[in-house]
Image (cartoon, rainbow, N blue to C red; front, side, top):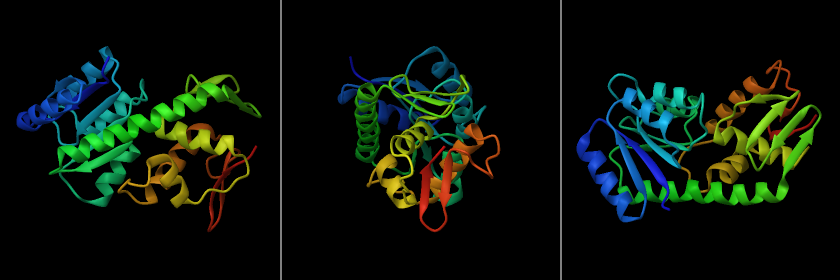
Length: 229
C-alpha cells in the first residue's frame, strides 16, 4: 500500500500537476482546495504527509496547520509564495515540519517528502527497539510516540517529539543548534537555526511549568541545549 498524501492548494493546475507526479511514484493522493475542506479531509482520513499552501480561502494554511496539530502529528510541508523569512518561521511556529517556496520544482517536493518519511521510518524502528524512556515524572513512549508527564499526556508535534526524544536519549549531552538542525531536519534542510529555537520554545511551553526556568530542557548559553532532570 502506497503512502497517502493530502495536497491542499486553491490553484487547481498546481494540485493537478503535483497529484499526477506523486501518483506516478505510487502515492495515494487526496486533494483539497480550501482550508475548510483540508481540515475535513485531515479529520476523517489518516495521511502520511500533507502538502499545505499558505494562502487559502476560508482558512489560511497556518490556521489549518494549527487545527490539525490539535489532533494529529502527521508531517506537514507548507507551500508559500512568499520568500520572507518570518513567514517561514511563522509556518513552523504553527507546527509545520518543513516549507517550500513557490514556484517549486516537483522533484524538490518529492525529495523532501521522501526525506521526511525516511527519517520517520528510521526513528520508528529505533523507537521500537528503545521502548519507553523515563526520567523523573516524564515518560516517553518511543514506539507510540507519546509523552506523559505526571501520567498526563502532552500532545507534541512530530518535530517537537523528535527533538525531545533525542535529548532524553542522551541526557546531559549538549547539542548545538546547528547539530540539532542537521540531526532532526536533515543536512539538506534550507532553514536556519532559528527553526530550532522556535521548536525548543514551543516544547518548553508544553512540558515546563515555568518555561523561563526549565526543569527538563536546559540551555547552555553560547553552546546549545541539553536534557536534565
